[in-house]
Amino acid sequence: MALFRSDRARRIQLDQTTVEPRATRAPWSLWADAFGRLSIRALQILLVVTVAAGIVFVIQSLTLVTIPLAIALIIACAFAPVMNWMRKHHVPDLLATVVTLLTIVVVLGGVSWMIVWAVRNQWDDLYKQAQEGIEHLIAWVNTLPFQLFTPEQVQEWTDALTDFVTSSQFGSGALAGVGAVATFLTGCVLLVTILFFFLKDGPRMWEFLLRPFRGESENRARRIGHKTVHVLGSYVRGTATVALVDAVGILIGLLILQVPLAIPLSVLVFLLAFIPIVGATLAGILAASVALVANGWVSALLVVGVVVLVNQLEGNLLQPVLMGRTMKLHAFVILVALAVGTALSGLIGAVLAVPTTAAVWGIIQVWDGPNLPAKWARKKTVKHRAVEASVAS
Image (cartoon, rainbow, N blue to C red; front, top):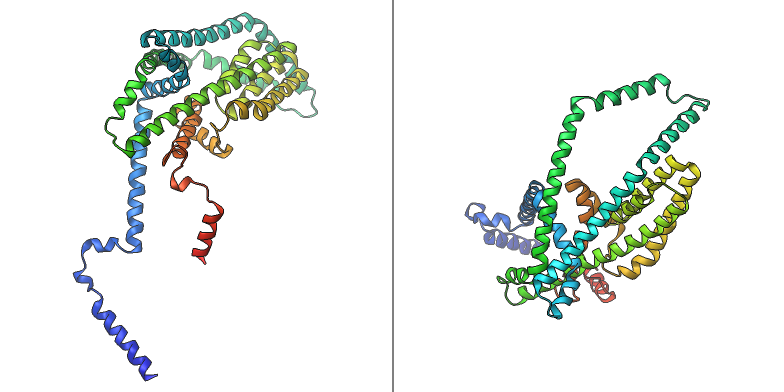
């Protein structure tokens, strides 16, 4: 026992002689322990969050530039195979760009004209049917054993709406709407201009951006660029094809059921299809609402059935074939991306959120090689799990 105590005393004395006095420690040694490393990580996280917040602030402050730039980039990626094909067949860059750009403008302009023409031709009939539908709804509510609202309340709401329409507040809102239209037109002009240069000089722009990189960094940058173009292009082309099939299927159903505004509603289905999950639901609600106002409950239920059937065929057959692994994202990730995009930039943010998220995930998948994801994103094999279990034990 005495020998054990003497050995313990010698160890304590040795530790006391080897431990450096606190007063003589270097200041940076305080960052070497566990709490110091935790503090360093916290500072790094704060720095990253600050930089990210600054980038988001700049993007939101310059939406007139950033949104057309992002949309032009995505459209250019979608038409990259067309441009590459024309370049391989020795078509001059300027001619190929003009042909592609005119095709895009004609298609978008034709869709817009179709919507305006259909709404203008059927608006009077729809207005009369909506008025009759509202009157029927009020009459049905009055037959209920309980009273939802009194005629005085209806008159009060009508007067309030009339006062708002004739007030200066409504006029200022109309002026703000004129300003929004002017901003929209400016953005469209900027979008077409940026798209022209992306289509014509995109490869040269990319080579210019690659100049600072050397060796493995250059190879990684090239992989990232090719993967981004592939993911964004495949997303747009696949989504457009699926949306076109959805729109045609729902258009046939609306025409059979004789629902007013069938063409504008089908075009709206096509556009909303670019917002995954949420877009199909909104399109179905709008189509069913028009059918309810115009034709009644039975027609509305049939429209809902048509929308559900078309969406099931699209989700189970078309998307796996046309999209493949391009959009291999979990539904939870898609919903979070939609929420973040909507919070940052509204409807445009919701449209751009999912392809942006898919492009980021695609970049992660080729970070360490053509088919080699980043180390933290790789799947664990049975061998790796066994090694980790042995280390843990």
